[in-house]
Image (cartoon, rainbow, N blue to C red; front, side, top):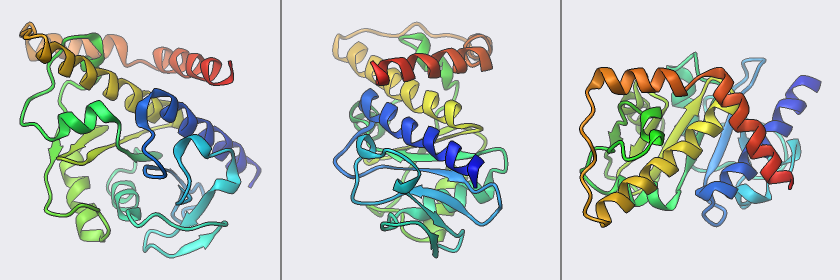
Length: 230
């Protein structure tokens, strides 16, 4: 449990970093960590904003079936987002669903994310998931979202928000921050009437490999932590 508590301390910090970088939306939004004992996942409690999450006490253990197993506080109704992605993607350790303003606006368009800045190259492909529900509250809806995500680490939820994930707490946090930056750059570029340079898929893949590295993730996480603590 000691290791789990330490991981949840970092996950709480990730929640506050995401709030600091535009992902906060009242008490909405949630982040989860795969339980190392295989019981399910630790999910941010409901009725608290991302910026209010302070430590392990702000997470509840939820089984993949949705039953709350441990912890104080309520379970978010959109828990199937986490259960179905974690079941479909054994490489993923952390899942998040948030409503960052620019990415949420962009999710309602039919546009492809344009590489106005390097931030877009974290996402050589960015899938978009459309559904006829406002909230993903059933396993079937969560499985459909996981299918749209596929092998990627982020998916736009049309006219709603974003879901993103990572192989570590640090990786998932970076994905979320860079996604909002890329969408903001896209909207600003389009609003200015600019057309992004068309880059070949091979070029985008090369740029992606150069920037989405373990060293860059580590450096970015350390910077986010300094800004949060400063």
